Length: 259
Picture (cartoon, rainbow, N blue to C red):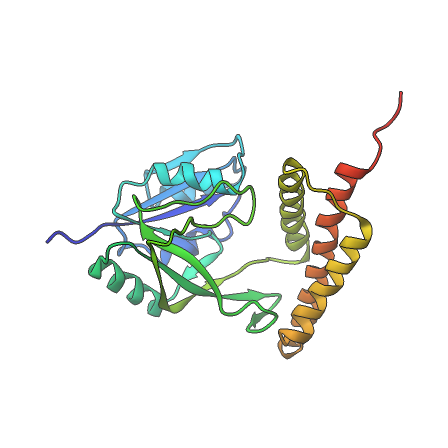
C-alpha cells in the first residue's frame, strides 16, 4: 500500500521573523509545503521559496476562514497539517503526526496542544494550556469554515477527533506592540462579523465581558500561577475583550456625522 502524503499549509503576512524557524521543524519529513501570503512587505516570500515552490499570494484579504480555504485548494497531498508561522513542531509531535499518517484511518481528524511562550515565559495556566486545536486531517475530508476570525475546522458527526501526543510551541507575541496590533485586528474582524449578522452591543456589555475575562483567566484558570506574565496577559485580554464590544457599539449604535 502506498504511504499517504502529507502537506504543511500556512497562511502568512510579514512573517520573516518566524517563518524559517517554523519550516525548519517540518523540513525533510513532509511531502509538500504550501504558503499563501496576503501581501507581505518583508522577505517572507524569499524565505518561503527557499523551502518550496508552492508560494501563492492573495492580498485581497477575505478573512481567515476563506483564506485558509483558498490555501487548501493548492494542496495536492492526501493529508494537510496546518501551522501558523509562529509555531514550531516538537520532536514528540512529529512522531505522533507521522504515526497517524501511517495508520491512515478513515474519517479521523487530529488535534494537538499548543504551549505558548508569552513575554518571556511559557503560559501553562490562564486557560491557555492545553490549547487543543484541530490541525491535521485528510485533505478531501473537510476544511475550515467561513469565519472571518477565530475560524475552525468543520467537524461532522461522522468524524472522529483524536488527540496527538506532543505540543506545538507557539511564539504568539513578539512584544506589547505586536499584541496590541494583533488584537486590534481580531477585534475589528469580530465586530465586522457580528455587525453583518445584525448584532449590536453596549459599553456596559463590554465592561462586564472584560471583567469576566480577567476573573476567568487570572482567578478561575489560575493565571496567578504564571507570575507577572499571567497578570499582564489577563489584563491585556480583558482590554481586548472590551475593545471588540466597544467597536461593535460604535458601528451599530452611534450617529454618523451630519452635513
